[in-house]
Amino acid sequence: MRSIRRSIPTGSRPNSIGIGFKPRVIRLAGWSIAAGCASILISCSHSILQKETGTAISTEGVTSRSCTSLVNLKLAGTTITSATAIAPPFTAPSGATVSTPFCRVVGVSSPSSDSTINFEVWLPDAAAWNGKFYSSTGGGSTGAIQYGAMSTGLSAKYAAMSHDRGHISRSDLKTNDGSAIPLTTDGSWAAGHPEKIIDWAYRSQHVTTVASKAIVKAFYASAPSRSYFVGCSAGGHIGAMEATRYPEDFDGIVAGAPAWNWSNLLVARLWASQPSMQNSNSALPAAKLKILHTAVVQACDAIDGVKDGLIDDPRKCSFDPAVLQCKGADSADCLTGAQVNTARIISSPSKRPGGQQIFPGYTWGSEPLWTVNTGPTPGGSAFDYFRYWVKEDANYDSRKFNFDSDIDFANNKLVAGQTMASVVVAKPDIAAFGARGGKLLMWHGWADEQVHALSSIDYYNQVMAANTKAKADGFYRLFMAPGVQHCSGGDGPDTMDTLSAIEKWVEQGVAPEQITASKIVAGKVTRTRPLCAYPKVAKYSGAGSIDDAANFTCTSP
Ligand SMILES: [Ca+2]
Image 1 (tube, protein in one colour):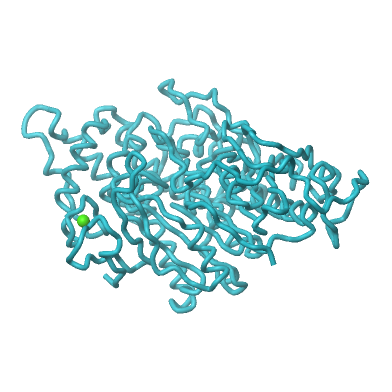
Image 2 (image 1 turned 180 degrees about the vertical axis):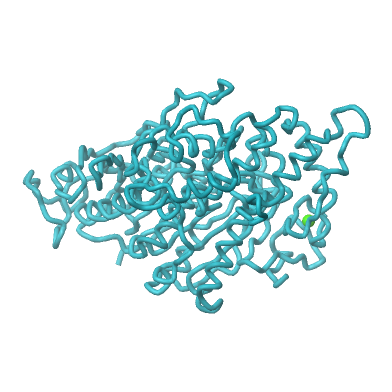
């Protein structure tokens, strides 16, 4: 048995890119990377070097082998293009730095004739390996290997893998108004490439996971003892997909702010963006969003019993933006009638003309970053989703979207013989994952401005409806994070070690009842607070600092 050593705190959001552009620096929240590596090893080749024969070796019954010989490993549907022993310091293509020696394996998987899924596996020296496999993937429509997450996983002694979800995002594309389309939302690769949509939606993670496990086994002569996936946003979507479609791939999955209901989520983003797309006077500039947020917090902070700047459960906040409407001419401290209307639309459920709800609205508290929903083009991946995946027309005008027939058109569009909805939506059907011992830890910021927080409540309710609560509690837990924006940021404590929580659950059978989250400002912890297994909430004891998690207990609401 290998000694399992966790030397660094690890977090939940190595790839918190989200499904849209977030106009600020994205932190690798929670992943406080201990850069130093005490042991100086000169290469990833391990102590039990096998003779390099240069011939293909089956992974069945293998003994360990050198790094460079992995290039000769034969895997169905996957080609290993290079295997290199890396001596630190090493700088990844993304700029991520690595200070640990490792074996860098670069490969490409092609599960269909139109598939090109680039991936890398970074293997720590056998003596350093914790025996486990770790994987993560990007948010949005991103086509890029997540080197930062790999670096962090490697530093924590995991065999780490990431992949580009089957396409490479372009950085030279523009929106209607000439601004750059972020890497995270480029969808131009999807038009005319249904197999690439399938790769993005679920197949890329599975095939690269299977290939990587074979590589791990060949290198160490030992399969990983445990396998974990951690992702946020569309990375959380992949986590949910894995639990549903490939229950054997991972023992533990952390899905943050999961964009699980991908198609209707993007319809909802289009809905939220309509007022500003139709008329720029309806847009809510950042300064107006600030006064809106101040008013929201003032109105709803105390409902949970603690005035701490956080709204514990925004569903209890019945804020009406009309209280901010200008009495006369537009000015800096009020909203115009059009802006009040925009705030109402963004915070309300999207509906078909007949009144049927499409998706929940954005929760109160999420408004500071509504700039992603009040531009001249739809927020996040919605713009390119409808242009390229659905309409396959680069000139498609999203302002003409019909919130009835076009929803059906999008969901029923055939993608290599399957409907779009069946391909891109991660159904909350995870009983098989639970039955085989898998654990899914889902979490969501209550102030998420991109993936509606209420969509995770919807997922929870569907899991509970399909299983008894007692049964579902054994394999699925949801943690809502008050005041936390999309994957990180916001007023609320947003740094927590979800990976340790899922490992304790998988390896020791200790189901997480609460996870301590920290708010870190300028490198200092300013507040800690328990995040509670939903539906429980953190209740203040009535004594002691409200900035100390010890003074709160998780209780039923
Ligand atoms: Ca409060």
